[in-house]
Length: 515
Ligand code: NAD
Image 1 (cartoon, helix red, strand yellow):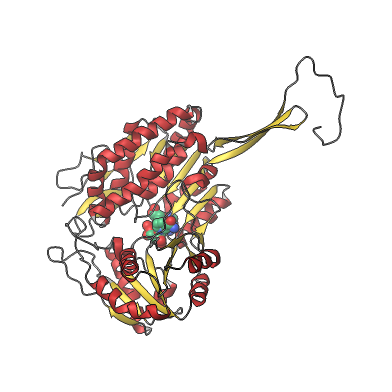
Image 2 (cartoon, protein in one colour):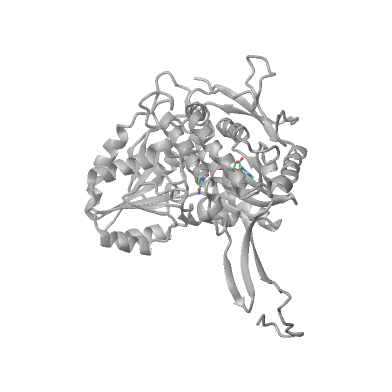
């Protein structure tokens, strides 16, 4: 299976054998980079090179930011209804092209085709929500805050915003960012993951087709140098980052030092707490799906199951369900678990599994030896389960980001809550129970930003915001929903008084009161 970079995102000038070069988007034009540094985009199931992605030069990053800055002058004054209508067209185009983009996404990222459609769909929902920004971006008004004085607020766009995205959701996460930034009146420079930029570029092409004007959306590719250039450029006003904790912390610090507004959504270790009164079949299905779906490469994947009391006896069932999952290339029908994104990612996950064995955890399901017929070179790891895990082990202390589930047991709900709350991450957590009282206690006492009750991956729909917390996030405001409208706008407060000819003069007033 081959991914199909389209004419505008990948150069077709190269010979038919050479992989196409992914283009930059600057000022409305898809252009070839003049860089000398390139990286291959590789199909993780086959190791086929699908394309080459440039690491843009500093001058190219500067040109993209300046194009965005120039476009802002007009775009910020484009009526909100016109901006929303572009998003309305955009959502229709994404819907129409979803199967094509999903195919590319599976080829470059590895996840199954239905999951790739899910990736696009969760982003599409944000675009749909962007169509209603008119009510979200409204300010406040209060009449008569003092005699004949009114106060109101304007929510004005910031200017050039930048987005830096990870490999694991090449559709959803870029769509968390630029549609809401644009519809609020900002212009944007996107830096997609260099590991799988092709589906992102297809979405960018559709944005232009929907009517996003030249310069309003720009794309540069690259790694640390490009990211640092975005974080330090004088014309960039805000940065949205999603990715690992180490890089997110760096981006947050560097951007903040340079006076930018920054939101960083970062790594995770998500626990699912299972009480013995939970629906056994549904809960185990949910745990297995959330641990091994997308080969565990979701920031909201369940990576630790905490079995409370008698629920510890569910471990054999859980292991059997995990063992039954079908590991295969993402485009093969019936696949449950595709490959991890790269050979380096596979080596990292295998290293952590090895450390778990060495440090005394019980490897009750070992996915290391999995072989996939026809895809012998793929980066496959089968579902892997550890029990007897302690909090000091490397497998517990690190985000594994692979198809590995840790199982821990505790006697009571209180101990489960204490365990979760003492983990530094705060992205997501689940509770499985039939008890309303237990659920109410859990949601109140658990110190994690996104809670699922009998829901394994509680990523909120875009009417709400993504609210990861503690070690999983830096910055106050999360992606999409009302919070991101706040993030992408500056509130200006106007206090106004109008005199008509009949108003009698108050005389000079040297006190602070408005009267
Ligand atoms: P990553 O941090 O390696 O890369 C993210 C982005 O940063 C990429 O665009 C990459 O090019 C850039 N980058 C990489 N190294 C850099 C450096 N040294 N300096 C500056 N920029 C750099 O993350 P990833 O491996 O692509 O994605 C997986 C991670 O993302 C996991 O930790 C996962 O939990 C996290 N994630 C978090 C969320 C969330 O909402 N909290 C969502 C998705 C993924």
